[in-house]
Image 1 (cartoon, rainbow, N blue to C red):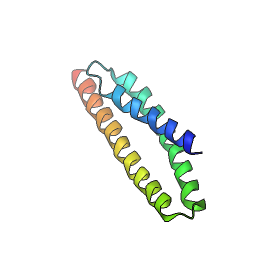
Image 2: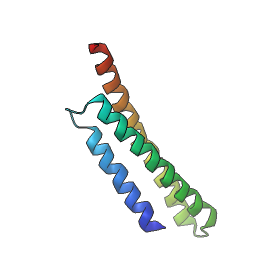
Image 3: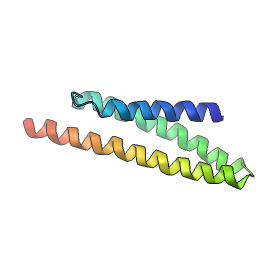
Length: 92
């Protein structure tokens, strides 16, 4: 379970990096955003499971910290998506 969680977090981090590309088009950002939200759902489901089953308080706290980190990453994605949307629609 931990391996899958780490892989999904790495994929999400990679999407964040892609979203920061200055030449990114609005349509490309929409695809990145869709993938990011799907990853977020998978990550949150895994964190829910860890929090429900784990007895070690340090690991539960780590899961909560990871959850906050994911929220921060998703904020970056949505902010970038909004930025590109505004740029695209102002040009039209």
